[in-house]
Image (cartoon, rainbow, N blue to C red; front, side, top):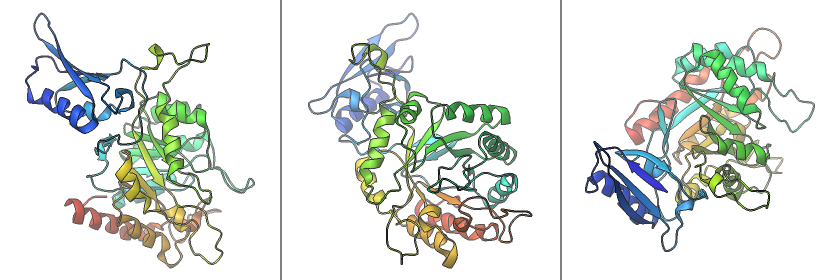
Length: 389
């Protein structure tokens, strides 16, 4: 990996030393500083070489891209970026629609309907006025029951982006299932004129390895990975999914061997882990899925992606305020994002399915959004001194 500094920065500049120290002390790599002499300005290049225990191919490039004075980071050997910290403890922080997320930043609310319908325009207005800046919605929902409503398809993506653009949302989160869906998302974004960030999530029931690799191969869409919903699923499931994303740029020749020259492009490392609860077989439990907020502690110790929690899915119902109670419990672990479904009025919209076509019982009613927002703002005020959600 080669870190190129901005023209005019000298080898003795503190910004060069900061990169060198991060590589050597933070990641255990060796470094070599070269200076390319130009007609008007010199350019410093810092070579990040394999260390005694760590290869440069396994180290993500994002920690160096964010350093002051860095112009470019490029790879000259095949990327084998690991989701693990690899000796460092630096979490990944990045911006979604201008909002920085990651450990050390306030928790952000991602909200909207479970499945997008035409009421998304009113719902978007409701949650935006309540304080949310990130809109979520599914246009196709894989269901346990094959005969259940699965969403309105591509037209619903158009509705989602139009609603986001009209209400000045900073980011849109939506689910994808196969590689071709990425272009559907891009076309809807362009058609709507939406200028914010876009996060594509891979759901618990989707096990499409080609999709994971395709997500790693592109850089304009951020990625959120949910773990499997199956009983007994572990953190390893998230790690495996992320590993396929990070291998998205590895190419192979006709002989089955890695094409090193074609495999040097860095993968998309703007990845978010999302916890959504795990299955159980206890018929007396109120929870739809067992909350696994405690995974955040282990994830933060070993892996660099930001962590989201979907508190609607694990609660499964607003009866006895369970979604709100679950959200409060999740906040104790300081997640980076909270996914909460809702925005429908308690009485429902006129017509059939006025409470939504999917998982209506686990959505926070519009009249109670102020409670949800107050909960998150209070958390952020306490931990970060910022009254935002």
